[in-house]
Image (cartoon, rainbow, N blue to C red; front, side, top):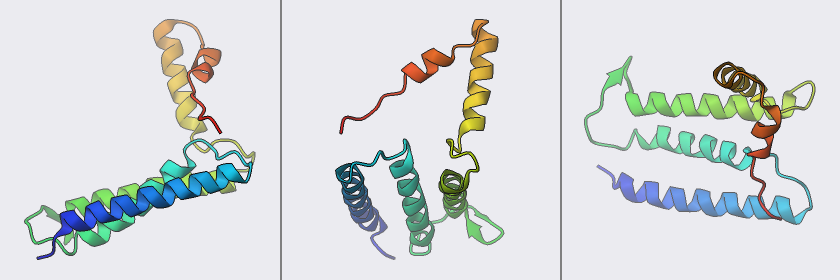
Length: 130
């Protein structure tokens, strides 16, 4: 049995420091980091870590087809992060890969409030200072 909580704390610290350094590097080069890029990288890295950490745990967990349930959640996190990262760089028109989700949310708000509020949705986006 391994001290997986200590491994997780150390991994989280290393991921946070690495992602902050990457963010500072992108900002220092004068480029705009696309919104969510650092979060997507963090999701991918932590999902991969948690998948392999589950092999070291000694506690009981629900298994589905021989894979522990937390590993399935990690696989889902890897797939979501992979989809978002892939869509960010291989999108034909260069727009945000989550545009379908944004359209869905806009449609729901227009049904609830009776009018389309594109400008108010865009005004709620917070940009980080350089």
